[in-house]
Length: 370
Image 1 (cartoon, rainbow, N blue to C red):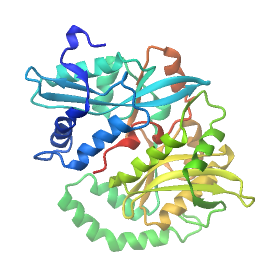
Image 2 (cartoon, rainbow, N blue to C red):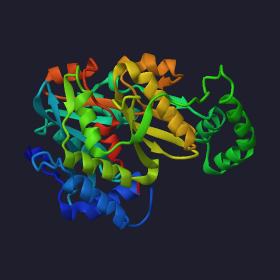
Image 3 (cartoon, helix red, strand yellow):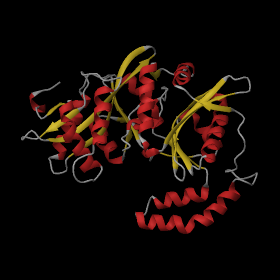
Image 4 (cartoon, helix red, strand yellow):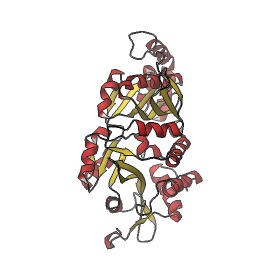
């Protein structure tokens, strides 16, 4: 794996954490000085103590001729099954190169070494347009069935102002929200009252309760039928993952709900980040296919009660009809899923959408929130 041409690329080890954390802090976060202890703790837990750590598929650093780390590519492994056959999927993330270094050389060598690793599938679920273009030139393929994102305004007036404010500077954004708040409140109040309004909220028919880890593990097993590829969790790995996500506070508070019918049969579930006054990010929606619209109704009502302006998430193409009927709109600007494998059948399977995957199962949910 470590040829003579790649002497500058080597595995990420624990004593590299301070340098890598500082590189992330200054380049990706645009901050000055050394990274705070929380950032170092994040890198230590994510890359050295998570349940899927495999030393044969490490994260990577790039050193210059003076031994200084000028590039980093984080690799998190996920265990999955294809028709019962175990495979290893390596998700690349937190890819950062010092702009003062020979960034093209460092970046290309990091990516080339990553692609040549022992994993069955290399993947990312949050590529932007620039990284997607770069990865496609290296041989990655864009996976369209897992690159479609949905959005659903819950408070349309405030949601519109929120969307506009994301396009402006902080000062103008704050002024815009302050000036428009009274008008948005009136518009949103009216939007939920009229029977013909697509934003009207009614009491859901399903019964929600807190979703615990054991129940989620049962749901992930029960409702994956019909798919050829799915993630493999156990109680330990799923507990760690949800606890890690819960500590990443930037997106809000992680809410997990299981849904039952009148007979207490489990119909579905959802997981999303609650952030009052902002947009909530949906991690996962699952359940019986024929109840998708009822599950969405419950999710929308739950988020609306908690002051969320709207919801965003990833949707499989087979469910777009149900989401559309519930007044969602769609975009491919929420993060591209791209993948590479020396096994073409895995890429074809993904391109058919024949995989039980969500934002829970990649690197999107492992973003640093400190």
